[in-house]
Each structure stands twice: as C-alpha cells, then as structure tokens.
Length: 478
Ligand SMILES: Cc1ncc(COP(=O)(O)O)c(C=O)c1O
Image 1 (tube, protein in one colour):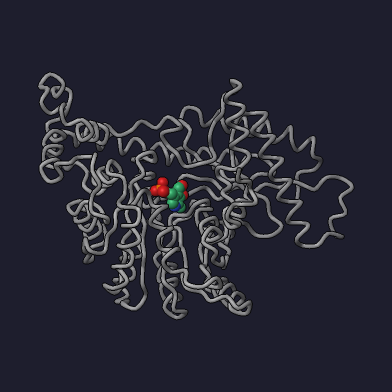
Image 2 (cartoon, rainbow, N blue to C red):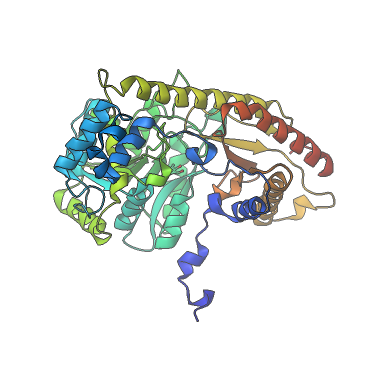
C-alpha cells in the first residue's frame, strides 16, 4: 500500500489554508450538531445566497431539454429563457452531455469577447479566449505554462489568495512575495515591487510573471487606475508577463472606486510587448455560482504559436465542464431590457450587490468598534482581512527569539485564536498566516457573506468572544 512517503513532495508541501485544519474541525463540529457559520471561503450560496432565477431556469432547460416539449411546465418559465434555451440547443445540439472544443463552445467564446469589448471599449477576439473550470484552472494553466525552470519566480501579493502559493509549490516554482501596503488601503507600491524583485534576483531567482488580484482577496482593496498603469510599466521594464485575477470585478462597493481591467489599461497604454493573462469566473460577483465551475482566461499580446500551446494544454483535459460554460455564457450575456426576465434579473442582481455593500459596512464598522481588532472597511470582493492584536503568553521571552521563531509563535497564536473562535461561536475564519502577512502582525480573514439579518449578531458574537479571549490571554495590545 502506498504511504505518504510515496507521494509527490510538492503535494505534501502545498498548503491551502482556506480549507485547512480549522475547516476540517468545523466539519466535525457540524457533524456533531453544532451550527457553523462558514466565513472561511467566498462561497455565497453556501451562506444562503439565492441563485439567480434566470441562470437556474436556463440551466434546467439545457440539462433537460425534454422540458421544452412540456407546455404545462413551460408556463413557469419566462419566454426569453425558453427562446434562449432553444437558440443555444440549436447551436449546440449535444447540450451539456458531450465534450466541446478544447477551448470551449465557439459562440460562448465569442460572447466573452463581446463582453470584454463592451466592458472596456477595446478590441477582443474569441481566439484569445479559453473557457475554463472556474478561474482557478485558467490561473493554474498560466503558472504551468510559464514555469520553465525551477528558479523561475512569480511575483505574488502578500497577503494573497493561496491558489497562487499552493499552485507554485505544486509546480515547483519560486514565489516572490510583494507586500501590499495596509496603511494605504492595500495599494501596490513601486518601491515595494522593485525591492522584492531585486531581492529575488539577488537570490538567483528569475522573475517571469507578476500576479495581481484586483479587487483583492483577502484585502477587499480595489486598485486605482494609476496603480494598474504603474504595474503594467513595471511589468514591461522587468520583462514580466502579467496574470490579472479579476474574479471580483463586479464586487466594488465604494462609490469612489471603479474596477479597471488590466486589458483596458494595457490597451490604453498602447502596450503590445507585455503579455497579459486575465481570469474571470462565475463564482463571485452576484452570480455566486461556485459549484458550476465556470470561467474564462483571456490572453493578450500572445503570439499565435504560444496561444496554440495554451490550447494544447487545455486539450489535455479535453474541455471545461459544459454546464459551467453555459453559466459563463449567462454571466457575459445576461437578459437585456425588454426581455421578460430582465426586471427580475435586475432586481435579484441589485439586491445581492446592495446587501453585500451593507454587509461589508456592518462587518467593517462592527470590527473597528472592538478593541484589539481593526480592518480597512472592504471596498470590494467578499472579505475582511482583520488585524488582530494579542500579546504573547506571559513568560515568553519575546526579544530573545529569532525573527523566524517569532513568526512561528505568532502564527500559532493566530491559529489558536481562530480555533477557539470556531469552538466557542461556530464562526469559521482563516488565520492570516494562510495568506501571508507583514512579519510581526496577526490577522484573520472572514467573508461578509452571511445573510444581512445575521450580520449584527455575527459581530456581537465576535465581540463577546474577543473580549472573553483577550481577558484570558492577558492584555490586548501589540
Ligand atoms: C482571487 C480568487 N481567484 C480565484 C478564485 C477561484 O475562483 P473559481 O471558483 O472561479 O475557481 C477565488 C476563490 O475564492 C479567488 O478568491
């Protein structure tokens, strides 16, 4: 029988905190009957977000086309849903049950290109687009394709979504962390980027790509137009490709901020030398269709022979799942004014987005009113990256420890706090060390996805827990 010793070392070393030991414990507690509030992951429908009616009506007809011959059942469907299902099935008669072209169904790729053209007012072609099983697979394809040697490095934000660190460990590449600046609302700074790339090169790492998550996970920050221009110029100066993770592009709550796509900025700058890979997904935004595993990868400034290799890579897994491709189609080609579904679609969309905005504010303001916790009120995405202040246990000779030992102690303190929070309140969050953080700081990440009416109660539970916990763990200052 195989044992762990037989396994790929990279797999053993990869860490994916958002589904780590705290979540495993949460599942055990749930099996024992405890109510768990899963704030560990951006999984909206697991936290009671209702799927959009249009999406599910359409998918149901595509999965079961026999319904199109059942007039009684069809009375429950909007006319445009029926017409859309018929039109899709006319173009794709095998429906959801057959493999598609490796890159995805052509008319859906064309719809994605049209979506980008409309969103950004720039050219986009379906030949640059690959439909993927969620954004994760698109991002992993880029990492895999660009990683040529073991010392090739990818610049990834700190804190970051652990898809990137875990995938790089799996693939055997190097991480070049660049710190986001908590003081300036988690924007990127050119000095920090330069210092981190210089430091990596001094260690013999060869930087090949910079990964940017915008809006940010776990920070909830939305990058300014200037910041994106700076990153594109930095990429060019240093010969880096850019991987833009834009899965939260619909999740911007601050009226002062707007989502700017990298594709648009690259186009505006007339930049033709910087290769850009952008990923988007049906999992976030207001669809929250995480389970449908739909998304796309757009490749820009990529020569045809390189694109052909990306297509080959995708073809090795045949194609993205087809219900996910159809869900992506709905995301990029939603009902339009005049369609029977439109009013309901718009109401549901606006309801979800405005509740998310309110929840971000309630959670952010609530947390900032708890002594020892603080957060930059999320302007986007679905997360609050909460700064936690705890003092080490009495008797700890803090100054005598090395930097590494201190980081280790801090991450154990953070873990203990998050585990106690789970055990005592059922609130499941992820320790900040799972995302990377400024040395010497403590954080945890939680989503603001629970239902609006439960948000105040969630903050109260957190407050009571934190006060109890910090009384037990002496003073609550750094
Ligand atoms: C920044 C970021 N990128 C990608 C993903 C994964 O998205 P998908 O479900 O489309 O694979 C997530 C999921 O939380 C995310 O936060």
